[in-house]
Image 1 (cartoon, rainbow, N blue to C red):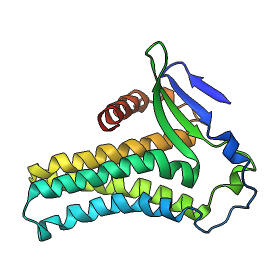
Image 2 (tube, rainbow, N blue to C red; image 1 turned 120 degrees about the horizontal axis):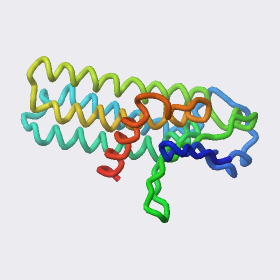
Image 3 (cartoon, rainbow, N blue to C red; image 1 turned 30 degrees about the vertical axis):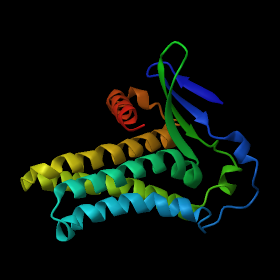
Image 4 (spheres, rainbow, N blue to C red; image 1 turned 120 degrees about the vertical axis):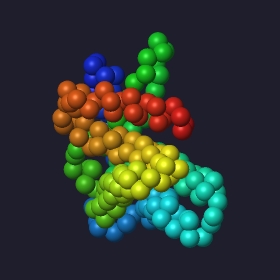
Length: 203
C-alpha cells in the first residue's frame, strides 16, 4: 500500500513486497548479512578513529580532512542505499515527478508475520546502535572543537553531524512514519529541508 502525505509530499510505502515472499526462515539472532553489517559500522567507526588519532600520525590537516570526509561520504551512501534495506528492511529516498515536484519516500516492510522471518534481531541491534551512537559522538566532537577553539576542525565535525544525522532522521521517519503523523511536528519542515540539501550535495 502507498500512503502519501499531501502536506509535505512524503510517502510511506511497503518495501520490496516481492522480497517478503522469498524466504520462510524464522527470525534468528545470527547475522544474516555479515558484509552489510561490517560496512555499516566500518566507515563510520573509521571516520571517528581517524578524527581522534590523525594528528598523532600525520601533520597534514588537509590529508586528515579529506580522509574523514571520504569515509563519511562512503558511510552516507552505504547506510542510505544498502545496509538499511538489508539489515532492517527500511529505506528513504527522493524522486521528482513529471510536474517537477519533489517527493520524499520513506519505505518499510509491511508489519506482518512474514516480516519477522526476514529480519535478524542481531542485525537490527547493530544497525540502530551504529546509526544512533555515531551522530551523538559527532555532536560531542562539534562542541569540543567549538569550546577548545579548534576552528579548523569545525567544518569536518559539522560534516559528520550533517551526513550521519541525515541518515538517522531518514530512518526514524521510515520506522515510525507509518504509525505516527510526524508532519504535525515542528521539526518536520526543518528535517525535510535538511535531507534535501544533503542529498542534492552528495548524490
